[in-house]
Amino acid sequence: MSIFNDLSIALQRKIGRQRLRKWILGSIPFIFLIILWEMNSYFVWLEPVYIPTSGSVWEAIFTLQEGCEGVAAAVALDNSCLMTTHIFSSIGRVILAAVVGLPLGIAFGVIAGMNRTLSKFLEPIGIFFNSISGIAWIPLAIVWFGIGWQTTLFIMLNTIFWLLFFNTMLGVRGVAKVFEQSVLTMGGSRWDVITQVYIPGAMPSIITGCRMAMGFGWRALIAAEMIGGDSGLGFMIFTSAAEFKIEEVFLGVIIISIIFMATDRYLLVPMERWTIQRWGLVWKPT
Amino acid sequence: MAVTNTDRSISEAAGRRSTLAQLWRQIIRIDAMNLVILVAVVLVIWTVISATIANPARYLPSPLVVGLSSVDMIYKGLLPSYFGDTMLRLVVGSFIGIVVGVPFGLAVGLNRTVADMFYPILNFFQSVSGIALFPILVIWWGNSDTTVLAVILYTAFFPIAFNVLSGVREVPIRFIQAARTLGASRWQIIKDVLVPGAMPHIATGIRLSIGFGWRAVIAGEMLAGREGLGWMIFSAQDGDNTARVILGMVMIGLTWIVLDHYVLRPFESETIERWGLVQR
Image (cartoon, rainbow over all chains, first blue to last red; front, side, top):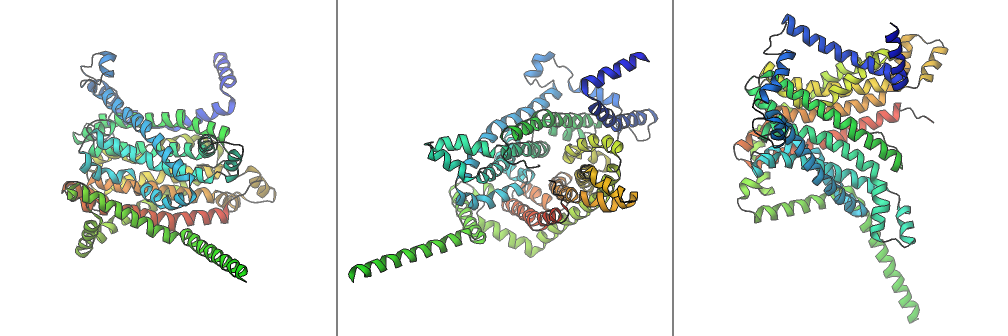
């Protein structure tokens, strides 16, 4: 018992009593769910056609990766490494859309937000395009680009761009005029005003926009891959469902949730917190 | 004389100009006017683009064609029927989600240990999108209304339950202590302190739930092929009827704007104004 005591004390020192308590309590429902799942595979209350056994989900990884020749082939998106290829193609699209969409949205948002009349004028456009959720664009995107990676990329880009455009515009518009005027009085150029006043002032709003954009964009991407894609995790689970391979569907859903949770918790939330601490003029709850 | 005359005329002209400018500024400030100009500009740009590209009927039909297609669809009664189907799904799904989610969040939030236990799992399911679960539900129930309703229920339930839970937890402890000092029973604390205190979060949760639910309805109808606005744009794309696709998109956007800006946001801000705890 003393080992457990020592371990418990060491853990409490390292993590902190409250956090440790929250972790342990928070993991109980997950463990309960897993136990329920295991019991279902053992007692077969529901047929494996509806709820696969955990073992078959684990085996689905190897079925999908069958014939994959090591890491090099997986990175090269070899057709035999189905799971990793789908994961990489989804993540690659997210990264590509973020790299293109974030700067574009921020740039247009700053330009529109600098002029009060223009931004008032353009506000309804932002509201309208944000209201047509990314998903509603899928049929039109299929007409324009056909089924394939262009459609999915377009859906993601579209979602990211409008959210960031709108948030940046509102953020820039909310920056007090005094800051801009003082920089101009002290001989700053227009460019100085943009880099020193507008962007830092709009930063909390921009980062909130980023977080929303990634959340909505990722959801829209999964839907787009299901309907109009030919690769990616959404495509993988949709085709597996059509073939009634429920273990592959479960695997895909688990991977999707893990990726989303990980990016949100370890990338976006810390970024948001850091920005609000560093740049926040007014703290706004998201 | 002459000097004063010119002076007067100058000042009069200046005055007139300033009133004109004021008037113009007032007009600019009127949102409705803005909106009319904006819509006109967008329509003109849209028409020009659709006139210049090859095969506009397939890629971008002009606003006129889209308008005609809407007249056609209303005349045939398709548009109202699809619209009604979608709204019915949304209302039923989010109503059940809210009616189940609010009491659940409250019940779980009352006890600190239980709340800490359920917080991560609700957060987890809140962020797993219902659309990703769609293939599983299709295997369970096929391409049926049950599937679409289950997706909406799932997407509506978790945001509201999560928000109510965190709302109850964020009621300051000293309010509860104050009520308890004054001899309030457990039920009175729930009724008079916790529920009113969580009210703003409940309102935000309801708005979030319906927002996510709306997206889920559209996606669910597309994927499961149940009649509604989502299915309308999807089948129109299959039938090469791009005018109908754009009509559906405009309908989806407008419906959500009306719902969000004229129903949900006023409801939320009213609730926050009425019940919001301002902490100093």
